[in-house]
Length: 81
Length: 418
Image 1 (cartoon, chains in turn brown, green):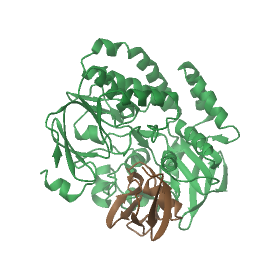
Image 2 (tube, helix red, strand yellow):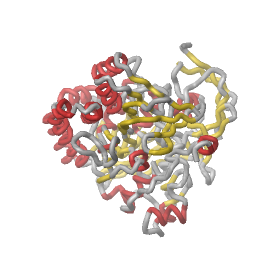
Image 3 (tube, chains in turn brown, green):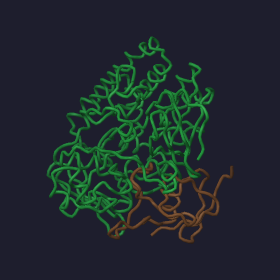
Image 4 (cartoon, rainbow over the protein chains, first blue to last red):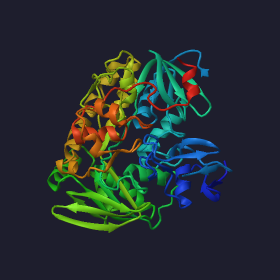
C-alpha cells in the first residue's frame, strides 16, 4: 500500500496519507461547501459516519457519494458545489 | 448479485466493540461467523482506524482476539432490506450481496443527537464525534480553534483526542448541571472507571469545562466564524474555526425496526440473553441503550455465547453487565437534556437538513406523520436519522415507521429484488 495518495478536489491536487477519507481531503483543499441544500445553502459534513448525507460530493462523475465513507484513491476526481 | 451458498450460523451487524465481542465469543464456539459493516475498516466509531494501531490496551486485546479467530469480515456493505427472515440484502460498491443467517446479532451502535439552533447548518459546525472521525480519517487540525459543545462524556474524549492532535481546543460547553456531573463523577469511581477518569482529567488539564453552558447560535456567512454561548444569564461570542457539537447519543434502531424487533424507551428491547422479540435475532451494545464501551463489550460477549446455546457461560457475565447497566442509568440521567434547549430554535431555523424544513413550518403539525406528509420533514436521504431525535425532543413526537430500503440505494439494487 502506498504511503500517500494524490487526488483532485475541484481540479486542485491534494496529497493525503493512504487510508484517508475523501471528506478530509476536501477540507484540506480549503473547501467547506461540499454540496448545496435544496434551498441553495452551503453544507459540509456533520456526522462523519455516513448517516447524515451532508458531505455528499461527485466522485469520478458519480453524484451523491458520501465523502466521509469513501477512501481517497490516486487520481480521483472530486467535485463539490 | 453475489450470494453465499450456505447461511452463516451467526451474522453480526456492526464491527464496533459489541459486534467484535459477539463475533469472537461465537467463533470460539466453532460457529461460522460473519461480521458485516458499512465502513471500510473494523472498530466502529470508538475504535475507528485502530485495527492496525490500537490506542488502548483494551482495543489491542480485542483486535488480537479477532485476528486469531475464524471470522469472515464483509466490509463496506450497507444493509438496506430484509428479503425474507434469514436473508438480508446489502449494497456494496460493486452491487448487492445476499446475506443469509441462522442467527443475527444487531450491534448497530449509536449516533450523536443533534439539536437545531440558529446557524447549526453552517459548514464547519460538525458533530463532536463527527469532527473526531474526520481527524481520524485524515483531516489536519493543527492550530485550529475548536469549541466543543453539547452534552455527554464524548465531548471530553473528543477534546482530549483533538488536543493530542495539536488542535487549539478553546473550551468545552456541557449543558448538564454541575450538580448532576458531581453525581456522575462519584459513579465513575463506583463502577471502576476512576483510573480512566483521572487519565482523562490529566489530558484535559487547562481546557475550560463549562458546566450548565450551551451554544445558542453559530455565526458566519458561507462557513462558521464564531459561536454564541450561554451560561446562566450571561451570553458571549467566541471566534473559532470549528464548532464540534453533539448532545449525547441515540441508538441506531432502523434495522431492528425493519426486522420488527420490539423497541422500548428508544432502544431495542432484549431478554437476559440479549435476544430481541424476534426469534433468532439478538442485539448488543448501544442499540439496546446508551451505556458505553464496557457495557457494549459485555453485552456482545453474552449475545455471542447465547447464540451458541452456552447459556450457563453467558450467565457468568450477568453480574458484570448489571454493574455496567447501573452506570448506564446514571450516565443517561446525568446527560438528559435540559428544557431550555427547546428554546434555541427560531422560526426560520432549519430542522430537517435534507429537505430544508424550518421549525416554523413544523410547528403547524401535531405529529411526525403529518409533518412528513405535508413538509417532507424526514423524507430526504438521511430518512430522519438527524431530524428524528431532534423533533422527538422539540415536539415530543414519536418518530417511527421505517420502510425499506432503510438507506437510499442505487435503483439497480432495488430492481433485482422486488
